[in-house]
Length: 100
Image (cartoon, rainbow, N blue to C red; front, side):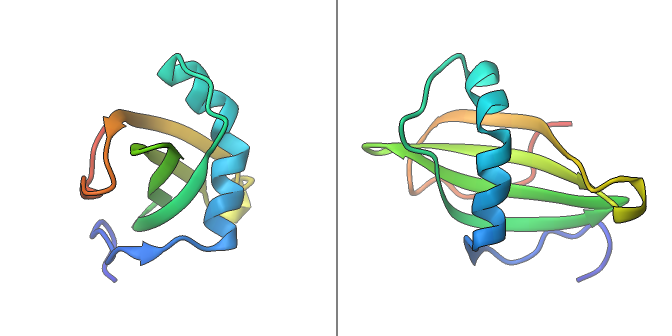
């Protein structure tokens, strides 16, 4: 995958679920909601000066959110930043690049 291109959508892995678990509180604050369920379903990545993760998350019933999480390069500390979030989505909504 070339730098800046969005990868193919893949089934969520344990690593992606761990990312979701780490940013859940920030997502609840940003989305002004409390989520009893926060299960990563699928994801895409975009390599930049780190990695953007675009993650589809099931938050209960037929409700989904999309997260844009940035993971810094290891030499900077590999910390995670929730850059953007889309709410009010369904399972059928496709993962695309969003937010700044």
